[in-house]
Length: 249
Ligand SMILES: NC(=O)c1ccc[n+]([C@@H]2O[C@H](COP(=O)([O-])OP(=O)(O)OC[C@H]3O[C@@H](n4cnc5c(N)ncnc54)[C@H](OP(=O)(O)O)[C@@H]3O)[C@@H](O)[C@H]2O)c1
Image 1 (tube, rainbow, N blue to C red):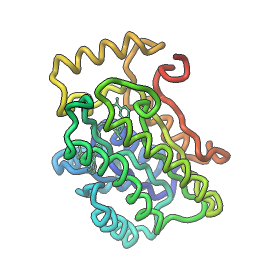
Image 2: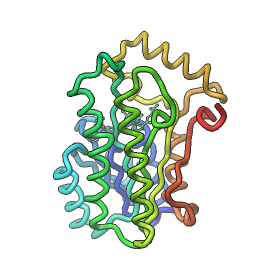
Image 3: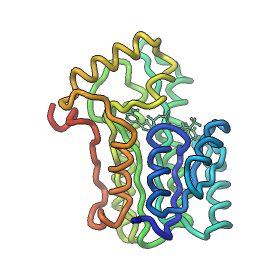
Image 4: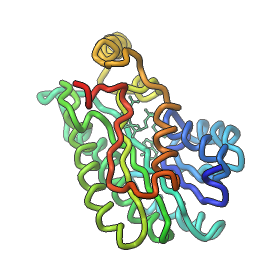
């Protein structure tokens, strides 16, 4: 029960990794608030997260995040644990990337996450803990992944800087960088057919030292560790959850 009496906000908590983490926070006593864009999966997640409250909110729009933060402030007064997980994929090779696709990925995965952090911080205080979902995509070159890799690499460096800025406020901030994880994200990549997704999975499994795809639970466990007091002397860290793909290459 590491999160008993803790107010938790998960941005992007209605699917995949975020949903698994939200359920795990609730299972350990946390009072969970979460966001997403899809009302149907928000409703399903709310039923699956004991005591959870879901909000339809677009992380690309800082005003929308501010509205959620204001509602949490009215209900609970503060946020103790913030998990910034919202993100989208978007494969396209250099010659095929459109300005719109680039801006879409960056507005969510980089700009949106940064300003969401700024908004949520307003009601966070000493002892607070932040975890941000990065990606191994920021640490290796995968053809076609330029827009996503650049956004996650920017997010990673921005968060490292913010972690340092927040030390004096008694707030820890860490990044968890998943490798290939079996979630809906893989199947809703606008630039890829089902055949290309299957080929990508095969290629990834062959290259992962542990020779399997990760599961959302694998990442959720790392997120809860970093968010908890078990990680009380850890800030500015980047934890790969990737079956050894980056560290053992
Ligand atoms: N799966 C992988 O292999 C992998 C690897 C490395 C990193 N990641 C990262 O892990 C995170 C979670 O992804 P996932 O694999 O669990 O995929 P997912 O099942 O597609 O989950 C993505 C989550 O982000 C939310 N989201 C996306 N855009 C949003 C927006 N504009 N505003 C609010 N919420 C938004 C989604 O909500 P809606 O469904 O309502 O849009 C959903 O809850 C992402 O940051 C992703 O980049 C995933």
